[in-house]
Length: 74
Image 1 (spheres, rainbow, N blue to C red):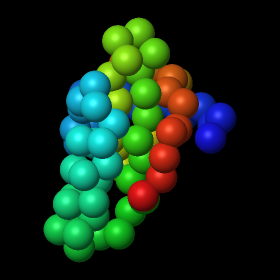
Image 2 (image 1 turned 180 degrees about the horizontal axis):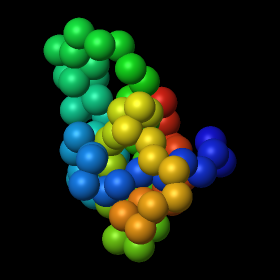
Image 3 (image 1 turned 90 degrees about the vertical axis):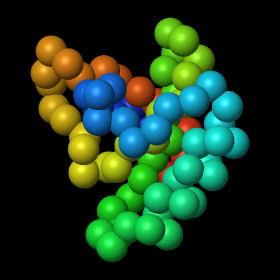
Image 4 (image 1 turned 120 degrees about the vertical axis):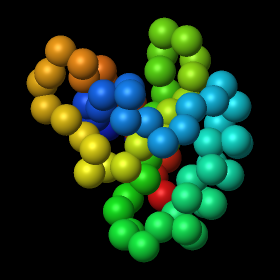
């Protein structure tokens, strides 16, 4: 996926360098959640870390927002 999306890094549900750990966390989180919002895995190009966010946590232009490329939706 080549879609850019803005998030505040402090709103991440999880972060890890290993994308498989993020996928596992996304599956567990999705199973436990009552609200069925879409989760996305993005990659931070600066430190090769993968982050997990809820799409509803997306922010507009802000000083704290950073642009990420979506790698996978759950």
